Length: 250
Image (tube, rainbow, N blue to C red; front, side, top):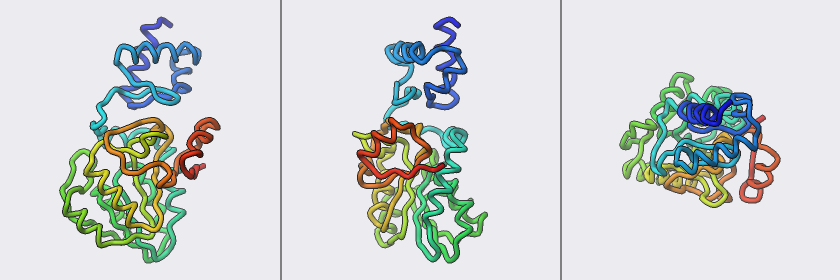
């Protein structure tokens, strides 16, 4: 396969998935890992992608938020495992906070196993799903953000400051050893930061494709909040384990 053909395949995969892993490109192109690394370097030099740990991501600005439908369509099996693992940490009679995000949604079907549970969420989509599963849910008021269907702003901040949670489960757009947990929108970062502060114990839920991704606004450092993710490579686990407690969903 010609270099131009391989690179076109890489760019097409990025349009579909936003992130591609090196090991997924090998069967698609028939090329070796070293050849693909050169392709990624060439494409990055042309500002057509951004190389990340183990692959590449589409070139988006630090403050750009991928569409919810786009995020929901990728890494579904990993998100299911992460959601089930996170839900297993919840106990009966708890008050928990569920952040917005597609990974958080995969917790919801498993919450019906608990009794006398109260869920606070700033996500309209998550609230609707919780209602479908007949889980006791409260939505604080705020400004609705169209891209993520999350409620943000000063009104919800004031409300959450009066609450306390047993657990908070937080989504993220990326996690990085230096940048920490980040999200494009400072208003959403403020909600996440407050939910963490108001809970006895918090967890960030993210599939491993978001490793080394960085967005505009940090809401926590890695050492502040444990990470629930899917199975990591030995190298990834060894590196991240120096910075945070990791729970792998299997």
